[in-house]
Length: 159
Image 1: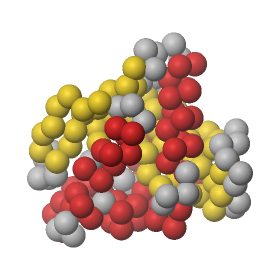
Image 2 (image 1 turned 45 degrees about the horizontal axis):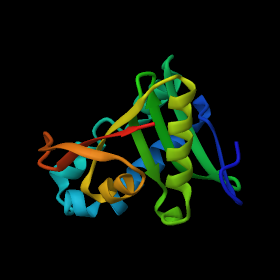
Image 3 (image 1 turned 180 degrees about the horizontal axis):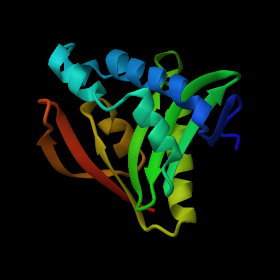
């Protein structure tokens, strides 16, 4: 699937796990500073389940839809959707921020949800990403502090 002039979105494969893990961890560390404020315990909490073993398992899980965005040969973003419409991951490589990668991935995830016949998509957003999701029609309904002291907002969108 092509999502833009240089962005190609495709289903993730098992051999994408290492690069996807590096991308997600870099994205959190470098782009989510408004959420973790460079506080090690919060960063560690955000990264605790972002391991290569977990990402490999998420890619392989039946009923889970894990996509990667590539710009040329470079992995530029990842996104994942459960079979019930929960967006569980949407991360962009720091070098590709503001280049349409996140937009291409969210469109792909929403289209997959529509293909599955789902009426909505749901997610939990960090403060960093909340404006991005709101601009794409997601509305917040519950703001809470997660287990690591970071604000998190549950959001949904009717498809």
